[in-house]
Image 1: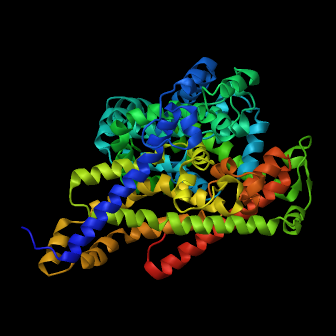
Image 2 (image 1 turned 30 degrees about the horizontal axis):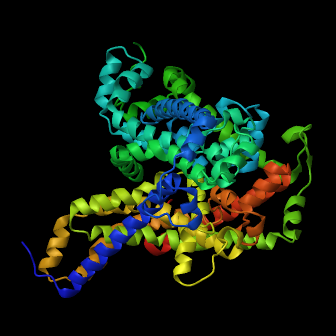
Image 3 (image 1 turned 180 degrees about the horizontal axis):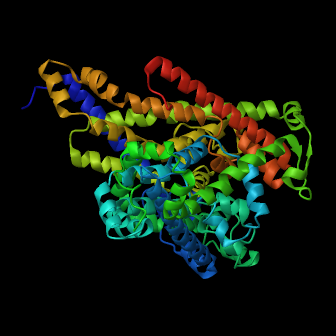
Length: 296
Length: 321
């Protein structure tokens, strides 16, 4: 049934809907603008006339990026870090959480406190840096996937999820002669696909966007992930590597390309995968946050 | 299988009886060896990368030398702390850290709450879904890209100066002026995080039964009264928890973003404890000195967290522990 709404209430609705529409524009416009700049002609960019739509049409930025080719190596590195890193994180986290979900596990209390402590105190940047340095992990593939593999919060979220699975499943599997490792692999994991998929997404996006560890621990730019490449081009505005400075200068001088063409093209190429799949995976992220926020 | 008695819904009585009669911990450890093997890799990684660095804090009280190692280096007492407090730049760094943290908090903490309340008042569910989906999007954009976009928008002919010119002002060198640093930093954080921040509040609101609102309507409550007496109380526990956690984080504004955004031109407002630690420690090799500053930062953060939690427990009965 409907009640007659007061004028004030209707005014509020108008204001609210207007505000939300403005917010949506503010969220979307910068991203559209990046795309437009990457495709516009240098003269339009210099004049500051690029808005929703590209002014003119120009693919030099993308052409330069793909001919230079370094972005592909950076892409490959990021995909490797994300793939291997996510596998390690999910495997170790779910193994640990499986044991914590078992009420009569001897180390249960100890392990719970063990991880809870790390949520509140840590060594800080310098001691962590020294440990990794002393372990000889500098400039290795593994420094990108091992040190951050286990997070206390994720362990606890997984534990809470596993605790809600029926205990009888484990018991009957146990009666059938399975040990805990087999039960984890054949019973718990298949029942937790939604959880695993959600956290896999989280972890992949984390790896996709990470660069700080690379800055700290990877001197060798052959190992650098995508974001470090972007940092050089977009943030430090240090264009080009494959091309010599002279060639870049010539390209810029010929007025076929503005540095912003290249920078925004690089941003688009780096963002593209996330933007493409975002509409499909967005609800899983939301679900993941919900699972995380109702922790036990 | 032999090792069954201790499994499943093993009655607690049995366990405690076992403990009393001395069925030793070693026997139980042996019984549960598979479980122990399963938890071990994760524990090991946590030990190496969380607990060992924790012991590394001692270098804050030593003169760390690479040759002698952490434990072999000489003790120097509180020398590094004194050095920090005598450093003429320290007041500026402390002030910047504190102001950036407090201003960030004042903007980015309430904003998602307000937005969630506004989302909650939308009646068309398709519109609400669309608005939420769009508001979450910036969360997935990396810090590097955010800063890259900022730099392009803040350039002489970029978006921001376009807006500035509407008001008849001269173009501003946003990234070269200390006065703009905090605005750029916090504004972009707000853009990136506001939508994502609403999720947790919307989750809390999803649990509120519609009957409450209906009953209130029948009793003649206005819309504002319903928000005040039903909606806001529903999210208060969540607000309190997040409040405590964000207070603990005030001393550690997103160092990654500051590192990308600042330059010697803007150190005056942008240089914070964490960036100072990065420059002097990682780049300058002064490990002991910067570990001491890091320890100081952690202590302050933990104190703030503890204090807020204590106050919250007294005032509202909501607390982390």
